[in-house]
Picture (cartoon, rainbow, N blue to C red):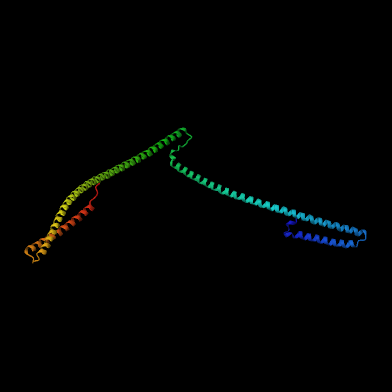
Length: 298
């Protein structure tokens, strides 16, 4: 087939050869037809025409064969590509299933190995409970009885150990509970002591408040009396000053002994007045301090 040749060089050369032959034959026929004068020349012309038609038919057939071959080649290539894609997809699916099955097999093997290890451990721990078989019925019965006795002894021993452990745990829990109760009782007693002390302090505070109220009332009364006395002294002093002024205005003579005594009395009264004012200020300050220090009643 011609489509297997690289680049179609073979078919192109063959077509060129046929075309060249056709051209040569046509030129020969043209030359011969101009010089035909006999029957032999006519026969030669007919033969040339037949050879040209056969060459054209051959060329047309070759073109059709080449086109069919190319179509079949393209179709085959497309089918091969689709088949390759399908095979690649199937291969990927197979690899995915293969990896999944491999993982499942590995997990199952690990589980089987773990179960086998557990079985060996249990068999080593409880080997004494297995009853051996024997062809002799009496021996088999004796072995079974002995194994049951051993199992009973082992179970009794385990039960005694558990009972001892439970008694120890119960004793420890009882001791801990008793200690906790003692601690709670001590804390409650401490709380009662604190409450009693707080009640005593509250009573003392109440007593102090009452005492402060009484002292405040007494101080207020004394302060009122003192204010009354200071006001009286102030009035007397003012009257004395006015009298001295009148004496100096009416008698502008040298000061007699009576005036000197009166001036001394006036100075003494002014000195007492200053002392009284200082005491009054101190009492007012102490009263304000007592108000700040005094606590509110509960």
